[in-house]
Length: 299
Image (cartoon, rainbow, N blue to C red; front, side):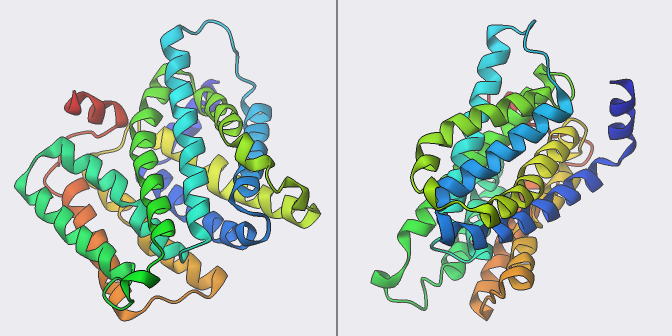
């Protein structure tokens, strides 16, 4: 236990977050291959089951000695994880991964803005909203041709992502090491079980292999790294690194899927990334941001 604590604390928190950003987006690109073949439900269930199994084997968490409040916290964290994963994967059936992640990113951006209440942040949100319009090609496509289902699913994933930010820190504080994450993954698997069983008969050996890769890249590595990093990361660095999510998603979409974004979509992505730097990064030097501190600020 001491060795694990020392090894985790020896790695700079920004590197933990950056590693999680890269890992989760390339895992998402693999998921974009998997989802069209077996559907969002089975894809998410496969990912979460494999991730939960790996974490149970690695952490071997104890189940006794926790309070009711601790179990409620990890239960809420697991619920947010399950819904976030399902809605995001479902959006990949309708949107390019770069578009889906950029729209999803509005969730944590809005959370930070609401908690900040600074005029500059409100202008940043307006810029981000314009960016989403450009990314979704609302200015280029007739209204009837816009994929509102995909946009709605991506926005739902963003809401769950905001909840994830808050609950991740609370879970990390309530449970030792990565035990809370392990319990949350078990809960998340149960949450998506009904949707995952629909179409499960289509899952074959190839899909199991893909699912294992997605589980490691999109769940085990990033969730573990983020939970550890959010305990000791400054607001400025956290915001700047988190703002890389849409850009890394677009890169992953290009490398893995061959998806290319047009000039207007690239401008829109730049607006969202710039807004995230303003809201989550600039002007907050010297203050630590964790999910707990966000929750305390918001009351």
